[in-house]
Length: 263
View 1 (cartoon, helix red, strand yellow):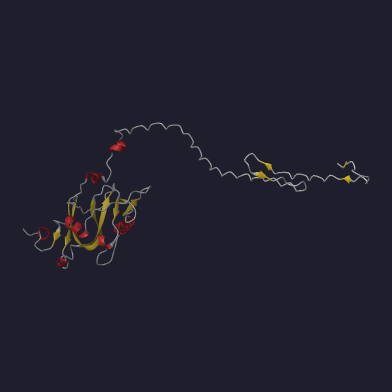
View 2: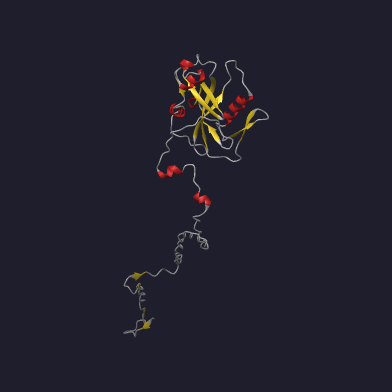
């Protein structure tokens, strides 16, 4: 603001101009914590607001499926100790007792019409040999003949095959099947018996006589039966036991003496 001073003389009054007081530079605004915060200029662009990205939540593992609730099962009934099936003996009952069946007798016979039997396959379980058969009433006895006597007994002996057999009860026996004679002639009984013996190598058979047709016929089970359990005994020992007292190895054998009529 200009002020006028009274002149000391006649000179024109001089207008004194009062210098402008510079504006006081604005002090930076102080924050409550004592750090100066600069004031942005008027023409400064407003800073863009900083946005913090929203963190992606970690995947939540799926909850295991709830097990279905099952009603408690009924308590099983105790087996009847008097049930015949639970009391029945099996063919291997002796194994559970820790004992072994001792084979002291092996019959030499044809399979019975009422028993299921099997023939053990393999040449090591059979032999073609010469036998002497004696009949006394309904009893028939079969004897082995030593090779050294076959020429002397050519009219008495018969060629035969001895087969190792077993039935469902585990009883071992030898089945003597006659073979064609020196002339090569066979018969229907021999042919049918050999055919059944071949079938019995792979399946259980039951053999019966067909008297009307002069042959043997056989039956097979409708359902599969367990394979036989063959005793752990060699074929040599089987022959030894079966013909323990029926081996003709001398012309002085009681059987030959009886055939000659010797006293």
